[in-house]
Length: 565
Image 1 (cartoon, rainbow, N blue to C red):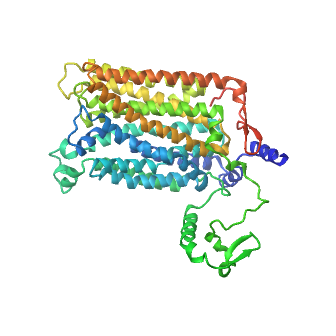
Image 2 (spheres, rainbow, N blue to C red):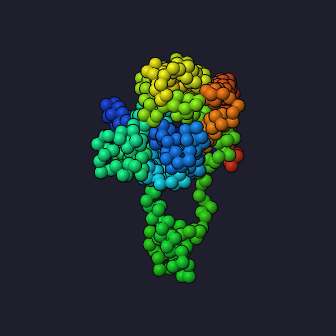
Image 3 (tube, rainbow, N blue to C red):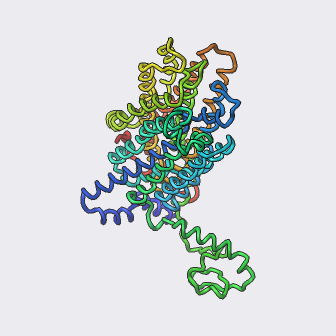
């Protein structure tokens, strides 16, 4: 019991990365070198996050058109739920793998998880673009999400690179998560312009060239080729410019472990009938003719005897139940998950609103891309300063509350564009309407980044350092589930509103956005609850009891002061 308490106290006073920090600081002895390393790491992570953003967002402008291409019986009025399925599959896949990616991040390294995600995403992006049927498109989109462990790894590595330097962490978090805006700036425009090139640009050299038949058979391949290129570039950038932050004594080589696994499986039947000899040093059983070789530990499955003198490592006992039982962590995760659901519901509803002829604007992919590109441009100009200035002036929880008020609830203003566009030709979008929608959408996205950034930083501080990667994996699991349900919810709500006959055109779309906005006010209440709860001294410096060894430890040494950056 005394030894357990001493180990817990040592964890609270000794940073998890202390050994790695010392090695890192020996290499970076001058401020110029440190600043350059910080800048290059930030840029590499920014490129990875932009690739991630493009992978998710680029499908929204053309998901409905893709569904109609693969299922010719569909039209712009009843395609909503099918478009939602395409968008949802990515997040469904990520839901199944998020927590495992978190554990892989703690085992094989943060950098490994990011690079593995980029490598697999490049492959499945091309497969998705070449999908010949709706079912295969869903499958490849699902696999694209299943192979995605980016978000949790990036959030963890940002926290560890800055070593509790809150100012630098805020800057890096704002820049890296701000790449979501560049994804909004580039993704919809690129995917909108490159979708169905033969249909949109029938007289162009591309449509008349040698690739014409391929572009007819696979009209949405070009946006996915761009995704492939972004993943490859980001993979190279991360490889050369991002340092691994998981301490070397905790890092396990994936390649070596994979080789060991292959050797184990291949040797099960080969050696099971041989007599065994004991290894005196590690008390392991080996076949006699390989007992003297140190490399033969890879043959072991369950033959190793447990060492009774081996100390249990309390840092490895981070489980879902342990995280869920921490009141502050649970409250933050629920807010993050619910906001993920709402944001992607808006992202799915907006293109359906733009496509619909009877209850929307009735415009094409490229025009949708123009709106989202305009909003992305506004977002890029405002996002970084909005996050850093708001958090610096008001504190994290007040900034979060302001962000929730000015994000999802503003969705109810989008149908007003129908009034502004009244009298225009079918399929025509006035410049003023484009600017109006771009401004509304950009405010929503900037506020959303404020909410996500503050939630990420505050949630990280509700758990000790050693639990952050696993917690971020768990966070990504719930967030992925919310983002998987969001498109299905929005698509089904839109299709029901249009087909049920309960509303007259164009009030079907008004109903959709009003429902989502009302749900946004629930998030406002959750943010207010977080602020009130965390402002209580007993909750900010609360203690939680680790049941496995009856050791109580403070919440990562948090102070009683309001969390600011």
